[in-house]
Length: 278
Ligand SMILES: [Zn+2]
Image 1 (cartoon, rainbow, N blue to C red):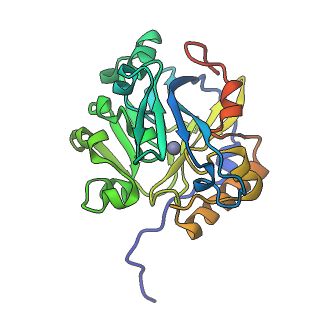
Image 2: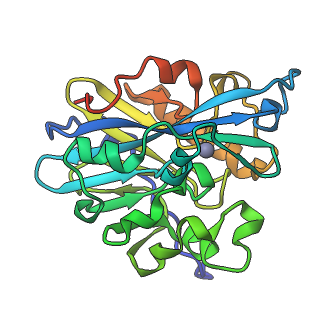
């Protein structure tokens, strides 16, 4: 028998996801900007409309009662807040605005970047890595595939702009290959969901009062993507379909709700920081 050269990716069991957690984690939703996409069909070619659409850009803080703090995604760059009308990106394909800086919202809930234990970006596109350079002292929880890519000459091909995250090179990287239990107690689990980038990841949280939620990263951009399984033009289709199936399987077999991070209608309903979900 030939031994495979690659170590197969870790997959968390449905049984583990269904195991009840009594760990009182808190989830804060920060407003880390807005992206206007001038043609939303780029994100879902199955839509006939080519109209513009505003996408919410949240970032998240998870406070564990005893094991530290996780920041999930780093939003759009705080510097954009200096331009009251926002800035253009990708030759006018996007218009970016930031009303409140991530730093000020972290401060409001008593968090300084240097005290963040773990930083986990769903992936490193500009709306998820804008403030990544704040988190050089945190342990970096990224799939090894995206990490290797991020610091290679191919980064730009995957839409990664190294200026947003180059300081992470000095951070301690925990090289992930698949699903990962962040605090080791089942409360907070990174799910490998490749497709939007080779190492794209989502986050499964067990909130004692709110119930279980999955933060989608960019597995889906809008509710419509989930309704018709539309796949953005940049994605690896095969990987994305497999990731859709993985998350569908989890949603069908657990009590978790899916939070589609960029969905503007969903964003309006969120209880924003300094309030929190527990
Ligand atoms: Zn995004």
